[in-house]
Image 1 (tube, rainbow, N blue to C red):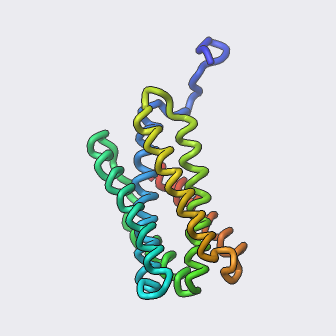
Image 2 (image 1 turned 45 degrees about the horizontal axis):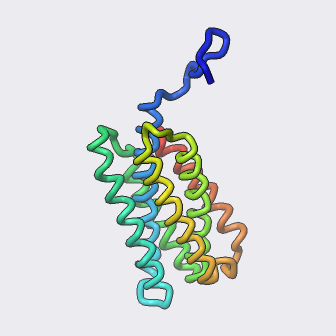
Image 3 (image 1 turned 30 degrees about the vertical axis):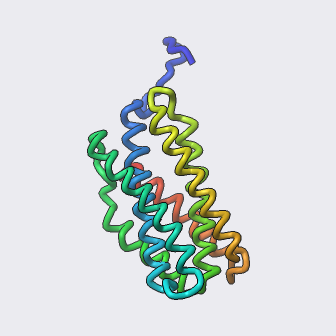
Length: 185
């Protein structure tokens, strides 16, 4: 869209490109941190059970994602979310609580989180231009990893979890709220 007096390309309150990238980096770092904590909570409960190796494998991929964003924050001079202590506790608690409901409920949690993150990364990929091609490609690659985690969880019985719809609905709502907060705080 061309900027004209009657139709400006940016409206009052719109984020600058720099602010948008800061939000993306902040929320993605927080999200990957939260994902690691969810898997740590699940492993604390299910680590010695059959689901343990599958969860460990997904957790390792999330640790790789987290390390990348942790390196990008200082490089791009972006502060992490001020809610990091909340993500530390809430992520572990969510993982442990769903794991206490059983391996299939833990997998249902993964499905719910990964569906929200798939949508989230897809929105980021859509707004990042060629000026941020490296970040855009990173988000797309990580989106694909998250989609794969969701498929893995479905393959391990997520849909057979007790109260699957209610559980995934609650986890999705919480994930969306966490994204909104982490972008801003």
